[in-house]
Image (cartoon, rainbow, N blue to C red; front, side, top):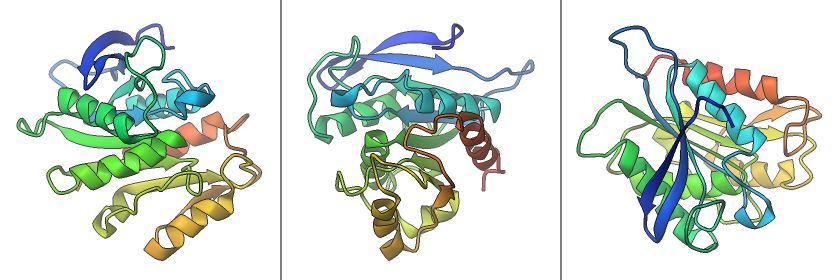
Length: 218
């Protein structure tokens, strides 16, 4: 955990949600580009907001001037509730988005990101939010296709989306991610020789995400 991260407890659908906020370095009068909400991997297999890939994505967003928000799904860490196979976790994610980037205020841009199970949940958050919110950036890493019913992404968001997958991912085979992406004609960036957790390649992951989210907002 970044020692400068701000720890918060938000009211979620079934109780408190443990949350961390990282802010970019800003000049006087500046505000963040927007809010990036990042979802962690599977709660039943050690996934938390302190996962190294999730932390790396948060650093990338902060580097590009975004406020990065990580949180523990229900039943993880000090977040209340119990694992709900993605249904309740989607509600948790939507509650965090509504807290930090309420639709009624339209203040700043919104980005969503997720790793593995978190990418699965994020895909369904996109389906829910797309009709009512402008999602400026989407980052899905190690998307848990094949293991879960990952939602298809709206065609108009493809240009704002970065999908990253390791060639040697032994948790979610690359073939499963491609089977999900192929019918959508959705590009997937494949990192040669990289596994699910990006061991030894986290700086590359950070740089790829930072470059994507630093592009001018349209």
